[in-house]
Image (tube, each protein chain N blue to C red):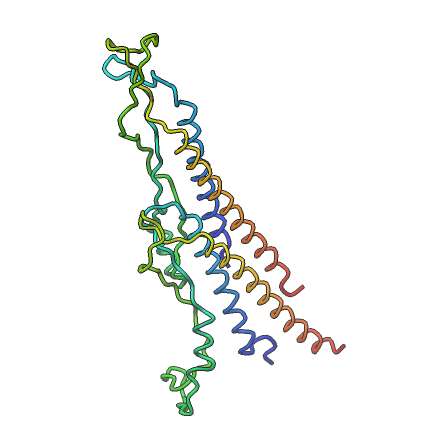
Length: 135
Length: 150
């Protein structure tokens, strides 16, 4: 029996990991707000997941008879977050491109996102607990 | 889960900003100091000090550990790499009564501009506050994570 191994639960776990990684990156951006020549980084996860889940839905899917085969079409595999460094923009005349207002709002947003993931994980666990205990 | 990374980053930034404020305080306190140190037997006025900040370099150990765990973000942070003396010219002030006045009656005063220092102080204090907010956000996330499955 697979209690908490559903794909939605795995996606939530991926979301928690991504929010965690994003927190580290935003914290680092804020820490280096006064560092000359520092370039900010950001973590992409939700956009990748969205693309994976909806945009790339093709009718063509390859049947895999072995887990080592290539995946053709949308994969059920969980996408992992990626780290990108923003080299292009400039915010300050010392080469630093950290916009503190933007970082603070991203921090708040990320926190809310994390809370909502935790909430959703808890809901799933509660459902499973109800199923197990039968009440 | 690695929350200590975020905490360490914020802590390093708090240390750096506080240190920056210390240096600014020193500049303001010494705005009138004409005998800061002795060079070649002559006492010279105080020179304004500025800090140089840079992202903290990662040790090989930390990079390897991050790569082996599959995470692509090694923990960073910020540090003060050096304190530099501002090489702007000292301000000559005509004051023949001053014990450090030269033969023409001029005293060389430190190149500290109080306005500039106050602006820097506000900047450092705001950055400090931003990092405290980031630290609190991380703390709130950790507390929330402890509620999973409760």
